[in-house]
Image (cartoon, rainbow, N blue to C red; front, side, top):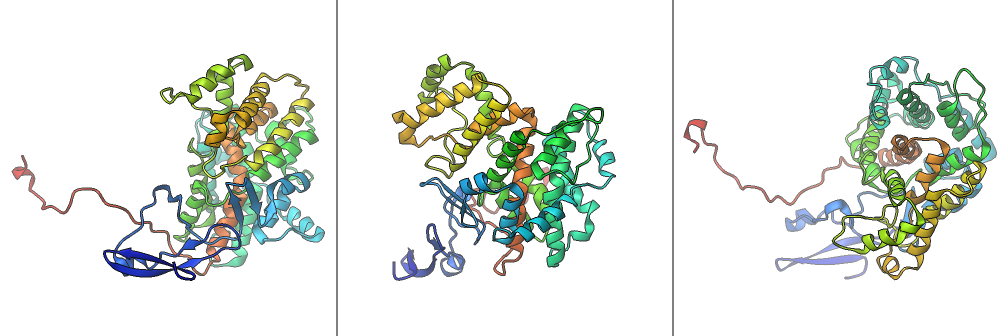
Length: 430
């Protein structure tokens, strides 16, 4: 390599490609002219070694177990701030002043109602529809209800759409939950905080007074902060790819929700909870550890390891503490699933097999227990993930739209199909 250049030799021809450096993280080789200069593409299934965009939003160092939102460590934001402050940070790039925070909170709180015709829209679904199916449809439908904020060339409309999404997704998520259990929809209350309001819409009923537990609301708020953004994951990349075509923001977020629904992405906390239930007892842990180490056994420990993190997931520590707080408030001193989770974590951090393979507990390991303790069914787990991630999707979409280097996404391929052949009339085919 020469200074700030990478040399590549193809069939005897050597070319130089620029090397770009970020503020932190690995350098990248800019390959935009590679095909023009050499006639070849790169091949990177899953884009695991490809930077698909330039971003100032979120940074992950998987080897060190670091997650930063706009430069701020995730643990500081979760312990000292609240979710709407994190939303402001992701959207605008800086933490708000007191005046800015008050104004932002007001705008979100006064956009949390959805169009009344949405209630009739819901009644078109089967009563046993999966809440994620409902969420995909509702997010797509928002462009029909709020078509005064879908002009992506207008900065004001982009911000209105961003505020609407952050404000209304909790209302739609709560409606999806209420519809799934046959209870009436509950209107949001402007006097309540973001997480508090969501729990109120989910668990209150018209026939009696409901007061949201402050510890539960804080736990929910932390879950939202920890899931708010996570760099260029599958669903965020989907939002950016959809947005690159000029699609309206509501359609792009709907695409992100659809991608998140995949069990390899948003369903991991549900799978982790089911695994703990399958183990059933601390006494059976050695049996399942042995199965996990057996290459011929299809059983896998869910909630361990991460596609990016090769160290302890920084979000998992916060989730573990929050899990204890919620269970203590509920008066659950001995929760079998938590006992199993704590023992599995201890093994993972000390067992040579887990250490060598870097199978550390991740956020999904504890979040499923918390959500179950709060009263949510497993079918709602991914919905809550989508609710929290909406702000990250919006921030990444907004950043992409405002990037002058942005182009419509158009990956290429390594074609291995049949080469060109001549059409044969059907009467002549054998």
